[in-house]
Image (cartoon, rainbow, N blue to C red; front, top):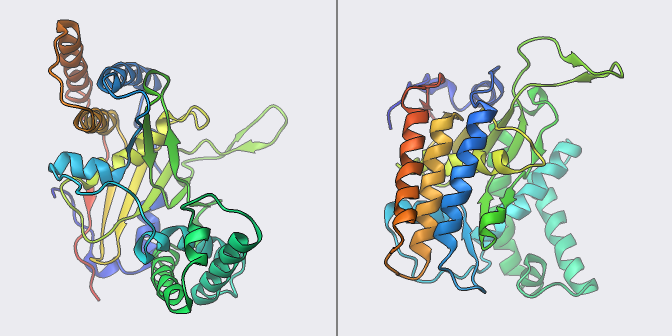
Length: 332
């Protein structure tokens, strides 16, 4: 990946990742331009999802986006619980508990979370396939394996950042978006931590005299393995889901991806070019999931060309500032 390297000896310290996460920044996306991009995206996504069967839903998350870009075909797309897939939801609850009670360790917190989930499955009737139901069916040894995986994951997140410097962090802030023009498509952005960048100046005062933080949102995601060529687009999906969420009302300014297994991080400024590239990747992923059918309408082909051309015109002359920082392998 092309980028500016940070000193590798500083990466293991949580201060370095925290600096990259919350450093002051202005918003890089003009809202008028984003609204136009959104209209184009909704139109293209609706056309791409049109041939899908009425009872079929397409979920586009980082995993499916990576497979679509790489051309990988899943032999079995059905989800099932394993110690690997269960570690994140348990780890999220563990980190929340540890931040609320500094005396807790990840080992204690994960034990409490698993015990609570198992008790919930026994006391209440859980929906089929839920994490609580799956855990309740495991023996003591199976739950120990799940706990071990969750402890590792929670420790990686808890030690990645200097939490005392982060203003009101929201842990486990995944975003799901369904657009009106394509109700069969669910966009899912994976976000471990959401907060706000450090303020560039004094806080604005509202009419009632209270202060409001107008700093842009920043996102933090933990990834697996090492950065791949699709990492930038995967992180862009997290930013896109936040930008498309009408309840949020703004685009984040930065996404930080952290690969603890390889000791690398990627700091991606969120500009219009990134969002446009991610929109194109999402549309391509939806098209690859629908039944094969030749496109016959000239107007649809023309709209596709215009969508791509409009994105290039927006992104080419506006090389919005903010370098992508590719952090080298950390010193042990």
